Length: 291
Length: 344
Image: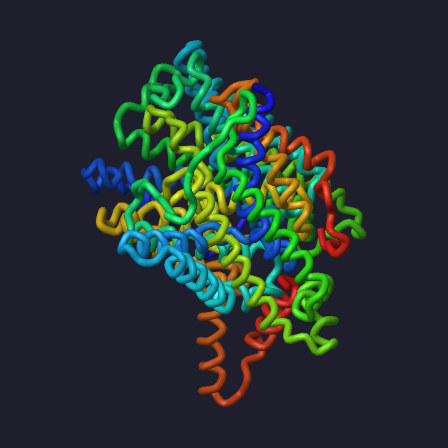
């Protein structure tokens, strides 16, 4: 029973991890709350869903969804975040809330507030048994994808010129501009790729739960990804995976051993106590010095 | 001797006209909407105290409205405590929870504070929803109208005056607070925490007291709201509700108390204008917020907000037409430019 719970917790955690990687990448660089992250990538997920309904090749549909997420966040960054980069902390946060509202209302007007069943048609859903515990193949895929993406991104941040530029910008924007880094372009790209990662995470999330609805953006993409990012450490990719696992473990174990009705309340309680004791998260990135 | 200036006369006339509203308008629906706007104004004022004056971004205000409302309703209906005690008790309970949250927030900075307030509001919502024996869970809790010393506020007109008196009392107290030493301290914390600390302001305690005061007023408005609608349901106290409440002072102008009332009125009246608007409500609000933050981050009446910008523009035009710069205008512009620099 404990082992089965652990397996479930890890699979829930790996779904959150994918969402958290995208969130943390954007969050770590500017340390501005991105309230719109979830709702922006939800639009990409819904585009993929609509294309799959029209019997397009799933890979083309996924690719279109990724591109839509990317372009959307480029536009949002240009018009809602860039002009407010120096305007304190409240104004950009509120602006992001506004963007989240716009995206949510757009989804609601185009696709409606219902819950739809979702199937990506590229993963075969099956499971196998080891002793008494059931393991789904999809869960393994998701875990592999999230860890693979994490390693790939860490390597890219460390060994490519663009990655180094991102690290530089997260330390100081004026200095990186003096070094000849086109800060605006790099920040826009980070936002774009953040949304792309979000779309990947969102699609796998929808595949895992076999449904898509308007709440995947805010409830999971923003809140849970944010919690996981802070739990793991702002700006640290490894931290966001570990933080997401911690979130998944606490959710599953609280709901099976403490109370399933009060699950969210207890998870928040654990979380608040944790960040009061350990405010920088488990793996504080060396670069984050602003908070 | 106390002198009455022009502004105060204008205010009293406005108030007198406003007091006539229930006598002139017989439509109870309109009176209901106006009373609702007044109660939301109190919440907007309390949020303005926390977000606008001391610069702490709080996303969990609806939880405090819920705490005050539920406490007052449960104590009044289940335990038959006199109304006035239940009512004030609800506000004090919210203030007490605010003190607990403020205690946590002593040790955390900006982002964490926002996240902790969201977490706190989620915990509160879960408790409202799941603690069946006390709150009747998601079915909602029924209570009754307020009654003072045998007089029961049954009609819409009487509730209108109840809300009006409450709003005026809260406005006066909050205004006094913002004009006091403590209020100036909040502004200093908002503008620059480090500089405020060097000026001898005890930042942590100030923030905590700010949370307590703000929670008290949110709680009192929440309690009044529950007694007014005679119903409390956990769906009224979600994050989305908090965000709507937060937008009221932001629209009116952070740091401007009359602005909060205007913002609350606009955001409560707009959805009532037409039901068809409801579908596009979020879209409208979103575009409004983005444009507002882009061009006037301090809303309608805030420092260098839309009103100031329009006034600046008019006086600039007038000065240009006269051919010589207006002296008072030049002074004013220096002040606003100074304020602008401080925001960054």
